[in-house]
Image (cartoon, rainbow, N blue to C red):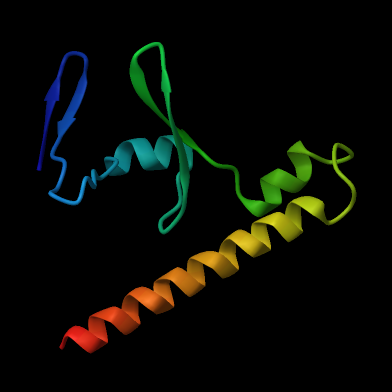
Length: 96
C-alpha cells in the first residue's frame, strides 16, 4: 500500500525490510522484475539506482574491460542467485 505526497510516494516496509518500488518508477527508470538495483547511502539519504542489463553493460563498458570479463562477472552473479534461490526453495520444502 502506498500514498502520494508532494515530495514523493510513501510505501510500506515489510517485517523482512522489503519495500516495493512503484510500477510507474520501475517503468520510467527501466528496472526489470525480477532484477537488481544498486542501493547506497548518499548525503544521508538512501539512493536506489537501476543496474544496466547485460546488453547495456556491453555497450557502456565496451573497450573498458577485456572481452568477456563483464559477461563472466554477470554470469557468476546469475549462478549465485540461482543457487541461493534453490537453497531457499529447499528450506521451504523441508519446513512443510
